[in-house]
Length: 167
Image (cartoon, rainbow, N blue to C red; front, side):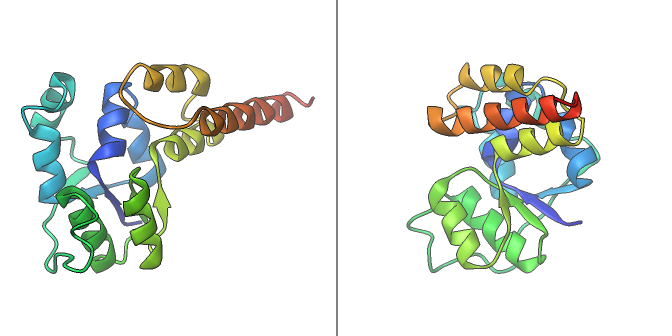
């Protein structure tokens, strides 16, 4: 499985101490050099910068050979590189949160998964025991999602837990 990540999902999973969910879900993760730069920039939260200084062996950094030129005005450099790299590698998924970037990736037939989707998938597969707690921790960051979307994932988790209990 080939999975490329933008900075958003990595940043938030690191901040809520759930980055270890990525290898059991996806195996190796490829990040473009622009995403590495964003996650080690001085404005990035210190905990994320420290985590990025000693990358785990399941993260590979790679530059796209052919940067995007047709949509770079709409997207940040990391997002553009992540989409270009996902396209080049024929990635199975692109981990990305930004709505404009997700739309661009979908236009290019790249499957996308955001931070909430990653947490939900981890809960579904039994890698994350407490999705509500993870979402509460996300709320304590600058992660942006509508209450409607957060409620959707919380309700989905509740239904999943009830069905596992047989009721």
